[in-house]
Length: 161
Image (cartoon, rainbow, N blue to C red; front, side, top):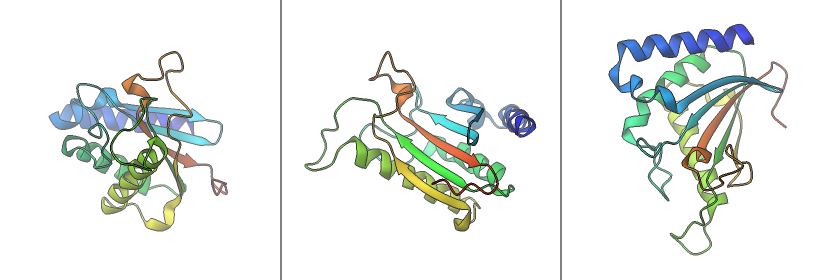
């Protein structure tokens, strides 16, 4: 797994050198080992958000990065668990719709983008909306970096349950 993490980091860096649109987003990508496999996180940034506030539509500028991530993970045997996260700001768009719904819709939008870019639908183990329940920046729950998508490449044999 550690070798895979290093390979992904090298491939993303090479892409960043070849493609300016990827280079602008490189700081939005984090790859690391976790207790369940390898986690790729697409992290929101005020200067380049993955989604506009309150929207579950992937920003056009981020689609090339998601497509490249799809190429990386589609070539593996690992199943994927996709999680959506929001910051703690209350959602104020529609009645009966909150950060739980928004994070789930964003995770599903990412799932659709990954499939459109070549990930087999059978490789997806699950899609979860976590709302603001698991902030990356615990000391600052409203921080933009808490808005993120996690793509967990599960260890072989793990179904994500």
